[in-house]
Amino acid sequence: MKKRILLAYSGGLDTSCIIAWLKENYDCDVVCMAADVGQGEELEPLHEKALKTGAEKLYIEDLREEFVNDFVYPTLKAGAVYEKEYLLGTSFARPLIAKRLVEIAHKENCDAICHGCTGKGNDQVRFELTIKALDPQMEIIAPWRMWDIKTREDAVAYAEKRGIPLQKVHRHPYSMDKNLWHLSHEGYDLEDPWNAPPEDDFLFMGVYPEQAPDKPEIVELEFEKGIPVKLNGEALGGVDMVTKLNEIGGRNGVGISDLVENRLVGMKSRGVYETPGGSILYKAHEVLESITLDRATSHYKEQVAIRFAELVYDGCWFTPLREALSAFVDATQENVTGTVKLKLYKGNIIPNGVKSPYTLYSEQIATFGDSQDLYSHKDAGGFINCFGLPLKVRAMMQQRVKKESK
Image (cartoon, rainbow, N blue to C red):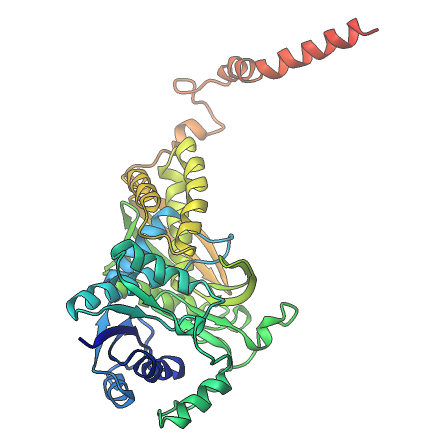
């Protein structure tokens, strides 16, 4: 029986070439899947293009709600940020797409799943680890690790020889990945970290801080158990929440990050990320946790956040450790309910008020005034004696040894 292969399809040059390459090298039927994770592109025309290029059919899957609720929000609750800057926009989209690929591969009785990730990037790992976790018997085909095409020029020549329709090259020369959460820019002159990002026609989700309004904008976010549920008093689902915050953050120059990061595959890469709505949500969540988490839990959660971010970045979403860490995070979020006000001004996100029915902050205790019934200044002496006892004993030992050595 003829082999059936499911291809993760974008409609771009690479995946268009891959359809032809698969049919030539595997004598197979090719089924395609394009995922809508909020990239803002019209995907319906891809049906015609996929069929003209040789595919049997194309699935277009709207994964936006699942993306926000099952991947973005759990990562937000964890406070996970990769290498202090990257809010993981591409990283947690890939396991979701791969999960749906496995589901459709089963539905279509496919023998293999194919992706168009390059051999230098992180995405190949994210796709393949998810496929292995969800169907260990599924064959995985990665053309960029197999074929003779090495450059865009090679791919164009390959497509022209086979009559594959080519997209017009976008004026933006950078490699970009966009979804509901973020937009990344890589390649071209950004490969030299000495080069600043261009000042004109570069950003897509907002403006640079110096171009933002001279008047600050206040946003009010309400959370329930670590999940944002209201924006400025309006109840919003996940997709609408992120979409509206992207608009607000974008016009205020919020959420632009320029970093050189350590890729999983061993090299460093430079990227510029736009995450306006996500940056607002992370700051609001952090502010709310400051009054609802105790010191020990808060500090330990900071350590968990680093490991959680590494797992997400490395494509280890469907792993026992990530699931266990999420269970810990969920336990910490039971009382992370309340309202946060933030002031947005020229790229800055400034706390402007926070309240919670579960606040651990007590003005009566914290005041410099009289709080004798809850905490007396005299209590500090005994605490310091106990807390400092190891230091005192060690110093006494050093004095004794020094004296005996004379």
